[in-house]
Length: 311
Image (cartoon, rainbow, N blue to C red; front, side, top):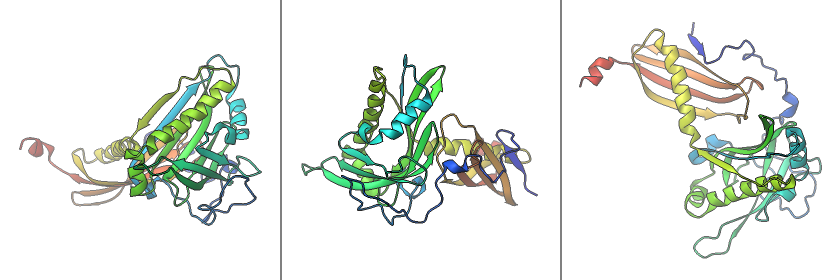
C-alpha cells in the first residue's frame, strides 16, 4: 500500500473523462496540412511529429506578456472572438500566421512564415513552420510546436477578467529546439525578436479598443519553479514517517500546458523504500480539465541531519 498526499483535496481528480474534451485536439502521430494557404509555404509541417518542452534543448522558460484593456467595455469572450478571427492581421510582417479555412479550432494546423534575425552580417533567414491548435475555447487557445520548429513547447493566448477589466495574455512554456536555435535565441537576437512579436500582437489588440498599451512582461525559468513545488510535495509525503531526508535526484516530465486561472493539484506518493533509499512519484493535475500538466520521479535518502550539519 502506498502513502499519498495531495496539495489540495478533491474527489474529482481521478475522473478519466474531461468535461471539455471537445476543446482538445485529438491525439495525432503526424501533422496533416489540408487546404491551400495563399502566401504560406508548407515545407516543414506536413508529416512532422509534435515536440513539447521535454524534447527541447537548454533552459525552459515560462514567458508571460499581458496588456489590460482598461476603460474598454469588452468581455474576454468578445476579445477572443476578435483575436481568432483576425489572427493573421494581428501578427507582424516578420512572423505571419496562416490558419486553415476552418479557423482557430482544436486539431487545426496554423502555418507560419517567419524571418530570423541576420547573423554576422548575413541576410535574415526565412523560416517556414507551423503549430497545432492543441486547445481552444471561448476565452483561450493553445498551440504546440512540431519537430524542426525553432522552439519546443506550448503557447497559450487568452483573455480573462480581472476585477472587471479584460486582460489579454500570451504565455509560453518552451525551450529552444536544438543547440543552434538556443544560441540564436540567446546571442543573436532571437529571444528579443520573439518578445517584439508578442508585444506587437498585444499592442494591436489594445489599439483596436482604443487603449494605450502598457505591456507587462515576465520571464521565469519554470524548471526551477515546478521542481521546487514537486520537491515540497514529495518531501511532505515522506516526512510522515521519515522526517530527515535529502533529495538525491529528480526527473520532471512536462505533459501539457497549464492555464491561467485554473486550479492545479499536486499529488505525491511513495513508490518503494529499500533501506534508507526512498523512491517517490508526483503529478501536477489541472483540476478543471483533469489533464496531467507535469509528472516527477525522485529518489530521497534518509539521513541524520544533526551529524551532517555538525561536520
